[in-house]
Length: 143
Image (cartoon, rainbow, N blue to C red; front, side, top):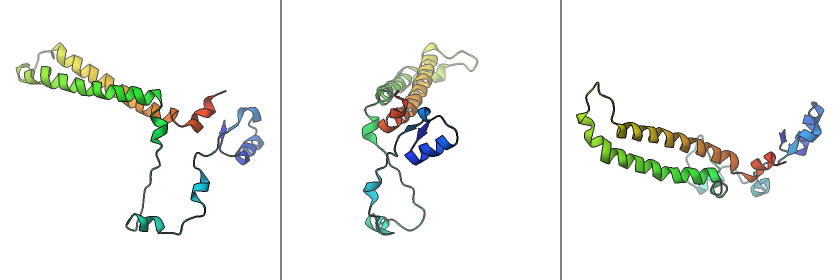
């Protein structure tokens, strides 16, 4: 079980969770970066943002680049592009020759199968990248 603070660890212990099963992994945001707090509206002023709802995103690309999943994903993207090139050069020019009831030629089936397989693998590798990139997160899996 993961806890963000020692206070949370103690609370989990009071709820009956075995203390040896609880690991404390602190919040990955360094709160010292945000003290002293800025005056309200300063961020909007600095970046000339209009009033209203605002959605922010915090990414850590330096953590993602080093993961195996990210590198696998990046190697598969050009392969997907080559598959599109193969389809447009070898298969697509002959689409008009296909009969409605005839089977799709093997080149078309191959391009379709490779495309579905590559894009599914790219999506899976992309999702794995997020889960295994942050050292604070992955520290919880090490025993």
